[in-house]
Length: 152
Image 1 (tube, rainbow, N blue to C red):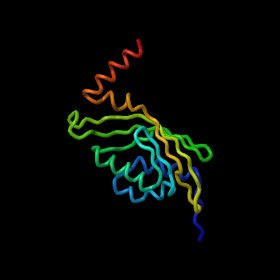
Image 2 (cartoon, rainbow, N blue to C red):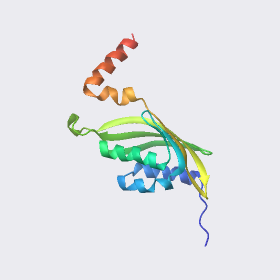
Image 3 (cartoon, helix red, strand yellow):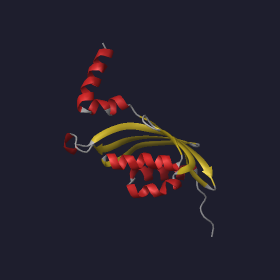
Image 4 (cartoon, one colour):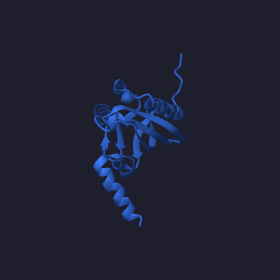
């Protein structure tokens, strides 16, 4: 009996399903998604390795209420994958737990290791000023004022 060979397409789909269903207990399976030396970068983090990536997601679950990703589109070509998403969450003790949304995109580079395709590069793109800072009570007022001044 032979195992079905892994493909880049299957890996891209595996990543999408993983993030759409991500729960704290899934962090023990990051090695099935990322290469051991994977690089992860977003507006707040720039790390390498599964342990460091695990810390980012663990912090997300500790700091936010009900965080989840909704994948809105996935385009895969060769070893590159581009995913757009909505990140929904609530900030404890803010806005009576109202759901917040950050819209962003992720560029993934997949690499084959030992017969399995995994993410070697994960780069998130989203506007921290518009998607996060403007939604905070005091800082949001300042950010909106600055935006108006710049656009004059």
